[in-house]
Structure formats: C-alpha cells, structure tokens
Image 1 (cartoon, rainbow, N blue to C red):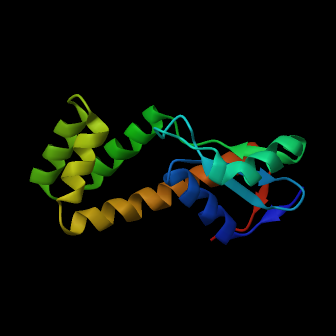
Image 2 (image 1 turned 90 degrees about the horizontal axis):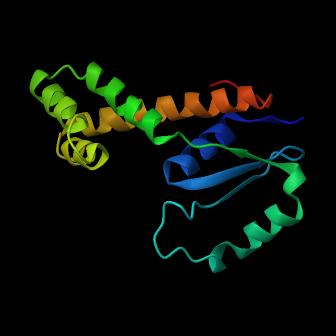
Length: 146
C-alpha cells in the first residue's frame, strides 16, 4: 500500500469540498476526481470521459474517498456556531440551522459576517482535512501528517 503526502490529503479535501467524487489509486497514489453527478444539475460526462474510462477500466486499483454526509456537514456548521465569540452572530447562525434550508441560510449569514467568514473557511478546512485523514485511516492508507 502507498503512502500519500500532506499535499495529497489537502487535494482530496479540496475536491470533496467542491462537490466532487474523489478516488485514490492504491498502487500509485494518483488522485482522480470527477463531478458528483448527484450534486450537479445538467451533469455532462463528456469533460470527464478520460477519468471515467480510467476508473471503469481499473476499478480494482482505486478506492473512493467518501464525502461527508449531509448530517455530518450540518454538525460541522453547528460546531462552528458554538465557537463564534460574537453572541449576535452566534444566535443568527443557530437560528439559521434550526429553520428550513439550514445550509443556504447558514451560508448567507456567513457570507455577510465580515471577518467571521474567513474564520468559517479556516475551521471548515481543518475539519475537512481531519475528515480525509479519518477516511484514510479507515481504509488503512498511510499519509504524512501536517
């Protein structure tokens, strides 16, 4: 089994964060990513044809690194809300998560929160990196720590 670099861990996290499916070649450490057709309207396979063919022809060499389920993403937003040291913003975020369309409402509030927007991205990034490391651990794939 291969060992992947911290840059590859970051690359996988970035792909998953962008709504892509991510596959790791167990022999070479090569990363393949394609759009997750479940998350994209009007999904067109043509631009991804080479990657799809590679995965289909060599499926036994690849392992999919799963993305967070929606309840895990929700938990991530809730955890961040608890860290916010601005009581007004914290209440807005918690309210957003308790209404319909919590992801959209949370995003709108964060996008309009000034410096807390970057704090959210930093928090989410660290948690996504840990998520990927946890998935790699579960697949018994070794990686370099940061």
